[in-house]
Amino acid sequence: MSDFNNGYSRPVEASADTSVDAGLRAFMLGVYNKLALGLLLAAALAWTTGNVPEVSSLLFTRTAEGILTYTTLGMIVAFSPLVMIFGSMFFMRNAGPGAANILYWLVVMTIGAGLGVIFLIYTGASIVSTFLITAAAFGALSLWGYTTKRNMTGWGSFLIMGVIGLLIAMVVNMFLQSPMMYFVINAVGVLLFSGLIAYDTQRLKLTYYTLGGNQAAMSSATSWGALALFINFVNLFQFLLSFLGSRE
Image (cartoon, rainbow, N blue to C red; front, side, top):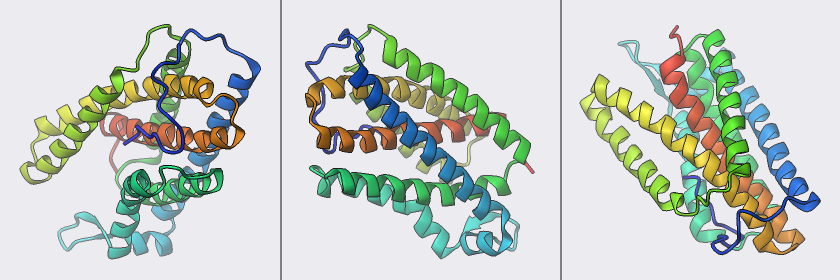
C-alpha cells in the first residue's frame, strides 16, 4: 500500500549516487517532520479512542462471548483509509499540494482513531515499548535506505506483490484461524514493511532530483512521501506488537 506515485513521477533513471545538497536535506526534513507530526496525532487519537469510554464505545464493542469487534462507525473508520488511499490512485494522480496534504491528514486521523483497539487488547507498557522499538528500527532502516549505494528500484514490484499476498493470507486466516499461519503472516509482515521503509526512503531521495526544483511538485511529494512512510511505520508497529505485546 505504500508504493505511492501520485503527483510526481517515479525516478527510474535517477542515480542513487547523487551527492547530498542542502535542497535534498530540506526536502527530506520536510517529509520526516510531517511524518513525526502525523505519528503524534495518530498516537493521541488512538489513546483517546482506546481509553476514553464514551469515545471507545462508539467504535468498539464486545459480543456476548466477550469477543472484541467494531461497531458500524468503527468499521467505517477502520476501512476509510483503504478507500481513500486506493481512491487517490485513480482520482488524485495529479493532485496539488493542498489536496495531497488534506489526504495525508485524513488518512492519519482515521488510522489513528482505528488504532485505539490496541489499547483494549495489549497493556499500555507493551504498546509504548513496542512503539519505541519500531521507532528505532524505522530510523535505522530509513537511514540505510538514504545512504546505501545499492539501487533498490527493482524492489518495488516484489515488495508490493508481497503485501498483496500478505493481505490475501490474512483474509484466508480469518476463516482458518491457524496459529502457525498467524505467526508466519506476522513474520513476513515485519520483513516486508522493513524493506518498504528502506525502499521508500531511497525512492524519495531520487524523487527530489527527478522533480528538478519544482516547488509545487516537491510540496506534493512531501505529503505522498510522509504518507508512504507513515503507513510503513504503522504496519511495522502492528506486526511487531503481535510478537512483543503483552495482552490485557
